[in-house]
View 1 (cartoon, rainbow, N blue to C red):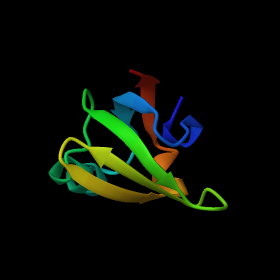
View 2: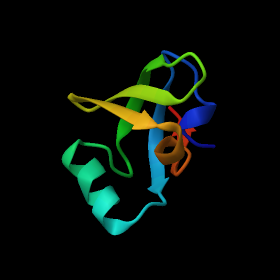
View 3: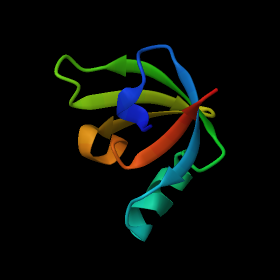
Length: 74
């Protein structure tokens, strides 16, 4: 399961991030890391972007990036 499988308001725990190291590091600086809890705040009309809350940060992700972040429901 990945972030794109979640609906607005749902919470999940990040299990893995399958992206390049520079992109993983960028997400870590935004508090999006394995073991962290995320909540879906908003999904765009055609599910092209996802607005998440990760710890104290709000993060907007494209569908391509969101598909690479595995989660399990909290």
